[in-house]
Image 1: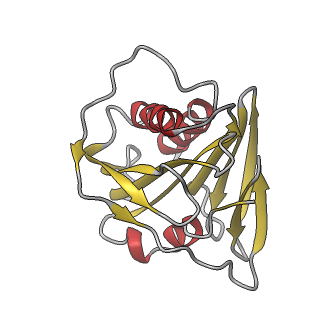
Image 2: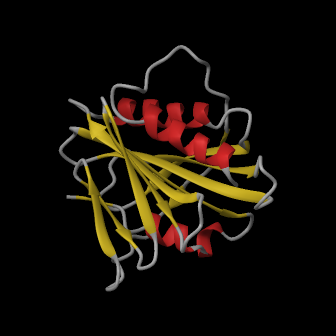
Length: 193
């Protein structure tokens, strides 16, 4: 997963923060599902807090991150143990009166960013403590560069309890391993503060 997937993640970062979520492109109709439950995970003792726009993720020891500032918010990508390709991303930005509609719009933008690459897209409500109105998509994709082969992805959009910030967080891993992956564990450390 070299340049093509890295570019996709950059597009997601650029289009899912507040203020960049509205356009007229039709979002593919994903398959509805019963729901996703995300169990919060305390940051590991050897991790470093990575904070953007009132949202924190734990950056594991040995990982690196980069940051992209946009007019509507901030995005970060996390890279595992020297891998040149990101496996976790977070995009967050202020949005007055952030509500379930704003969360849906952010998730729609993330879905659009993966159009033509993602397949078997399943959209679900997400049960996640302290992540109001959370909704997500799960999907499969083939690494366009032929490096990692088949992969799974999970993208979740939510808002903060105060209703003034929208965030999108996602993780990718080789097919069949997402829920056991280090990327998913990092996603589970997501917190508003």
